[in-house]
Length: 316
Image (tube, rainbow, N blue to C red; front, side):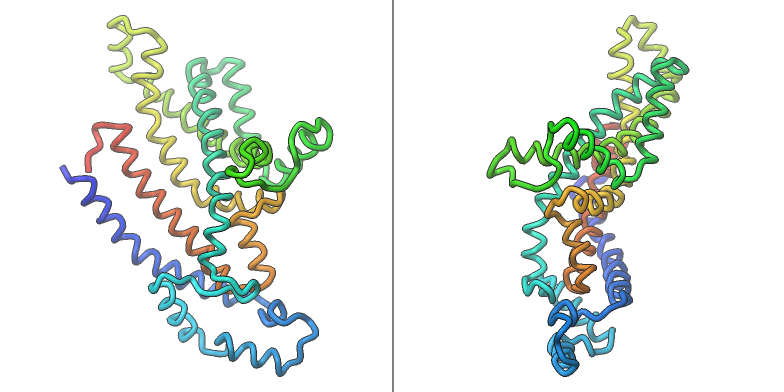
């Protein structure tokens, strides 16, 4: 049996070449964006001489390999560079934006699990029933609906017509917890319902397979209650696919946050990416995307550890 700390060190070491490759791709794609960042820096009225001086000052005229290794050196030194547009350190910008996106992602995942797992169990328990059909249709509809469309519908219904919840804005949780939750409910529902559909389908499929195993029949033969058979013996073993789905969908979750934060005017990591792309703020784009890649890789490590927690047969 391999101890968890040794396993974690091995997985973290494997992340390094992936991060290096990701940094190359991110840097290359960012520099392929059309447009001149000096327009965002100096405005439309600046002269060509001023633009040329700005390019020299920020090293934009240097060959791309030189720019990349200069950027890589600053990253290895713990610095993600300085924003061209806002004249702030990218790391400071990320620190200010991460709590918003983190809260949105955690609330969305919690909502998705709270809806998807019970719905999947119900659909598997009463396979072919009206409940199974309704749950399956709703799950497919939630997965098929784009984030921006779902967000707009929620705003129209719950903000404009019913007036129950605010349509946009953000207040930190530490400042006003109640107002913060009111502002984050609709964005969380927008992302959470889509992922709930994926989780429901995974739970339903896994439960249908597991409930036909011999140990399930043995538990019933021993007189175990149906609730104990479903949740103690069936659902626990069905959680492996759920954990896998949540881990694999981390990238999609961050991508959904980009759209949802724009729809609901949330000052998170996603809105920072959008603003940076429009302003051709290369350091901010590169820092935000590279941070997102790190998050996805870390989640895959956490998922591997959770496998062993949920299923004792898995050892590291």
